[in-house]
Length: 293
Length: 268
Image 1 (cartoon, chains in turn red, brown):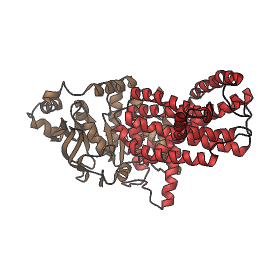
Image 2 (cartoon, rainbow over the protein chains, first blue to last red):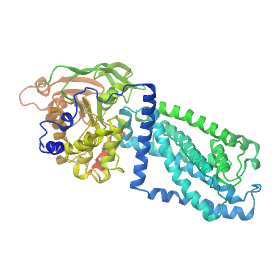
Image 3 (tube, one colour):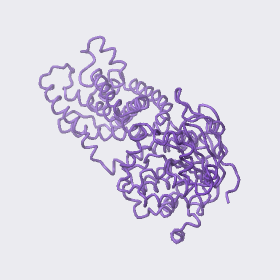
């Protein structure tokens, strides 16, 4: 058997690496049609995301600790506010109203700290190695975005579980669930790419931590996550309308709840989030190589 | 023994960061089969040079041709022709050795039917077969380095870059890494490494360039360089001291020092 044969030459007088494969100066240079290149691009993107799935499989404890924050929001904030009926949510109960908001919040919080992972990987030299490989920069960035989506998805599972226990009126229609899946991935992609851009600019963990804190709170509170835009003062309304989280929440609210309605229309939400993701990913792909400079 | 075929060439390669000139008009040639050492104190510009040659950093001016491709104009072709082991520990500790290899096999377009055999052979070659399914964070420093080298040559590149390959390793681990580098060299891989350990340069390199404050101050075989500073009885330590005397102590800033220490800590 050929592997045995190599093992029998520990001094390596003939390298197994060299001998087992043909002598080509540049191995596996892919040549082919545009279609082939596009396929390769998506393949590479999925390889990067596959890494994340494998990591989570080795150590899933992080997913559970991440469940704590949304649980506290729904159990404490949600229970109290649904009792005092301080927030006008129309004919939807407050817990129903806030559940999609908390899902959006979890997606945001998981994704926004993706930048810290980028800085961490840069400090370890992991990013250097990926950048030296023949992987398109955009595939590296979108792979990270997809990875954030995988984590976001685990949050969705947890929040659906909590909602079920707390009696939120969930729409189990498979099409609606697929829609949730799509928007969880889209929201994760948008916010993680935003985070990646920040990481490429600030470059150190300390600075990123500061900025990360400063950004997540306004994004969350200047949105329709836990109260409707209608009750906001005019200036805050304006901010909420340019806040991508608003459109994420709007779509999730339309899809997650029985009889849920979206204010802007789910199609419009999709276009806004998709456009934002494409824009940010393009900026990210340009900035990403600079993180190692 | 080395065939005189040019495989890498730089001409007046320069990189500035603001007003600071990290690499200043460096020109050298590497031939196929060389083990080429970039030597110099911390902060001499070795890592910046490597980053330019591996397409991580665009040159400010000058050119570099790697395996026949210009780094500025054909970075994708350069990337396919090289393997790279960064100075920092770059294997992913939260994955197994096998998974680390698998990901790179995929990123380098190694066909699915060849992947398993290739990864298997690499683990055999590096003497890591027993631990391939263990998480890399349980590896010793020398094992991590060997895994990283295996990862970097999985696609069989003609040129392998190693940035400070044995920094922070204990003597036994260092020997094991040297052994693998020598094997790769013997099998025809051109190797370009940076180091500031003279015994490492002595043991591995067939050609040496000494850098000092961004400039190339010496270029030759270890024998030639020793002769140039006084002939009989000279060691590479003498050569190093001669060409970088005033910076032996001042080299390396806080950032670099803390980085090396961090790497060393992770290895121990």
